Image 1 (cartoon, rainbow, N blue to C red):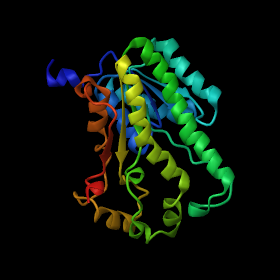
Image 2 (image 1 turned 60 degrees about the vertical axis):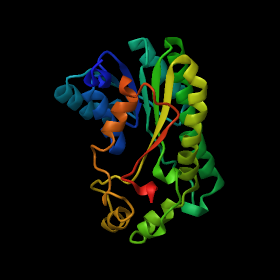
Image 3 (image 1 turned 30 degrees about the vertical axis):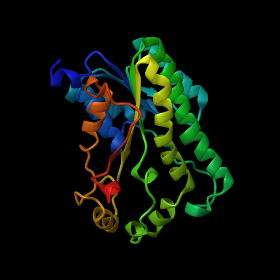
Length: 268
């Protein structure tokens, strides 16, 4: 096969959660550029409608939004089963959704137990359950690629000076659940790769760093960028190449990896 053919996802079915904003949007665009049929999991069909129409119009691919609630096990089961019923298979699963639980007091280091329980249930247990359900389908196919999102903050500790210009961010940076969730991903992909490999299924994680957006605090951007070897935050395109590699046959001999996509931050 040519290199271009290896990167193609034409005829492949991709399911993505968290695929409408930030790094998730870049991941969805990468799948679309490679020609995949895309099922976009979203909290409501209405919220995804504009993006779905944009993808159809500009990328010329099949895209369908499916409503799901990551905090509801029945909704997760419905999401996966709906894709299987409609498409008959799932070739690529990109799991990058993360919910911020609300309704409990405490921030950062002083999170209360109920908030932490909710965070583990929604962002860790429910996320792994999605992977399990998709994995069952991929086992029946004897093929597939699971890509889940960790974070460079799951690989190293916090640089306090990055957050000095924004007290609210400083408190959030020390949240226990984010650390637990994202550091756990790096261990889980090795564990899952060892299990799924016998079925021809690959499991990898991407661990991105900071992403520049219209919400980026300028002090954070300046301080954070000092720690990257490229001297900047990520832009919207920087996740596309790694997604295309891991989703396609171009990465068919890659599994069990947690790949930093952080401009060299974790290489310091």
